[in-house]
Image (tube, rainbow, N blue to C red; front, side, top):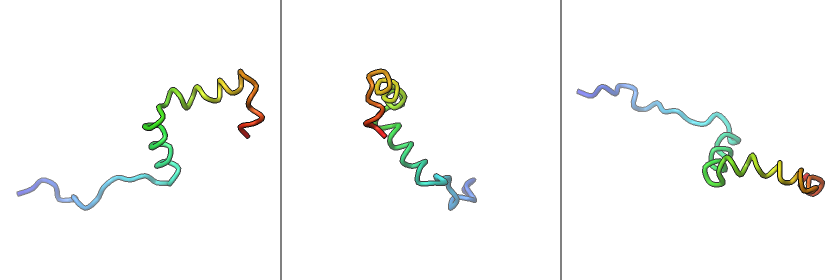
Length: 50
């Protein structure tokens, strides 16, 4: 007999932003996501990003 009685329930993302953030974080890398705004600000390109 199986110990998994609730096999039809599973966890999931609560919003589309969570899915996009997880995909971007795994594809790009969290270090590069944090480093990009810093480099843009240090080199004077913040006006062109927004």
